[in-house]
Structure formats: structure tokens, C-alpha cells
Length: 303
Image (cartoon, rainbow, N blue to C red; front, side):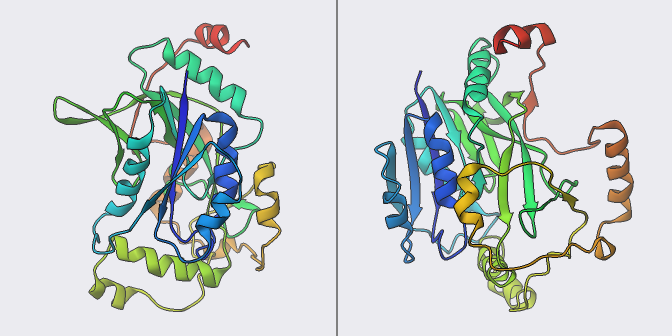
């Protein structure tokens, strides 16, 4: 069985993405790794080549900055990588996502399980969304708790919306994938930059959702305020080894102040319910979960 990985990035060094850590974390799992590299001027290509893996195939692209609606450019870049993949399975990892070094055997077990069911399309992964620095995670209704990152490569699957996840075409309709829910976390480092760089990134990427009038009214050069957030909690685990060197470059301090929470009354109530019952009510889900019995899981996972 062949597994292909893919990702996309543009000016990853300039924008503070841990894209080298991200790529390295997927390499042990895949046979080929397609890196869709947007037109960059910061040495990103040389950094990717410096990994020195013959699994990596760089696909050069040029971003069309006139695509200003719904983050369409990100879906486009993901689909370029997907169309290059020829494996039985595909695994997308985004440039700010990293896998832990001890997860590969477990992922392969889930893939073997999924292959036994024709109606299973892929795998669903939980997310740790780091915020402010590497000590806090955001686990609220404003973040996705799970998302699809691995799926069977049956050529009907495509990147959905702004590369949020995936769907497939069936009879000209966009269908949610049916997936197995894993316990293997994706470490997501989208909001772990120097506040000045975070503001720069935020201002730039807004252009792929909004027009110039909106940008003029809603962007500024003020330092990004990581305390302008609903709720954070301490992260008590360990980070992937692939992030070790990248984290050493941290050049800012963050002190979480829960008194500045901007959480709505509605979300306060729903989050409290979630904490009590360990379930997120009314959550948007871009997937359908295939439920397996405990005995089946034990059989296939060798537990």
C-alpha cells in the first residue's frame, strides 16, 4: 500500500511557519511528499531542499492574489498537491501542523481498519490549537475539535472551502466523507508567533477573504493581542520532537489574562455544558463518523 503526503506553503520563513518541522513530521509515514510551493522570496525552497529527503517533490506554483473570496487560493493549492498524489491513501498536513514522532504505527493501524470497510473514506484527527505561545491551547467552540487529514485516494475527493477539510463528488453533489475517529492529535501552531509577526500575517491573509475597502477599514499595524480571545487552558503534554529547534527561536513573552475573555454568553453556556458531558452540542461537522464496536477496534488495533 502506498501513502502519499502533501502540503502547501508560500514564504514560510518570512511568515513564521514551522513548515520544515511539519514536512519532517509526515515523511516517516509516506512514500512520497508533494510540497506545493507558492512563489517565495525568503529561502523557503532552499530550506525544503535542505531536508535532504528523496521522498520530497516540490511543485512550484504562483499564487493569484486576485482570488479574494472565501480563502479560495488555499483550496486551490491543496488540490494541486492532491492531484499529484498517486498513492492508495493521501495525508495532508498544513504548514502549521505537526505530527508527534510516536504516532505512525497507530495511524497505520487505523488505515488498515479503514481499508476493511468500503463505506469508510478516511480518518478524523483531534487538534491541539496552540495560542499565544507553546504553553496554552484554545479548545472552544471557535476552533475545530476534529478534522480530516487522511483519506482513500479514489480521485473523487477534493479540498473543501478554504482547505478546511475534504469532501467528495458523487452524482455531481458534494458529499461529506465518512471517517473513523482517531485519538492521534494534530499539533496546530497557527497562533504561536511574535505578536508583531502575527499581526503582519493576519493583515496579509485577510486579503484572501476580503476586498480592499474591508482591508482599509479593518487592518492596522498594532501588535496582535493574544489576550483578545475567548478562553485558553494550559497544555500539560509534550510537543513533537520535530518542533524542538523551531521553539528555541521564540522571541516573545505571553501572559494569559482570563479576565479579558471575549467569550459570548451563549458560548459560555455551551462550553460549560461541553465540560460537564464531554460532548460539544450543535457542533458543525464537515464529516460523518463511522461507528465501530469496541470489539472490532480491539481486533484490528491489536489492543
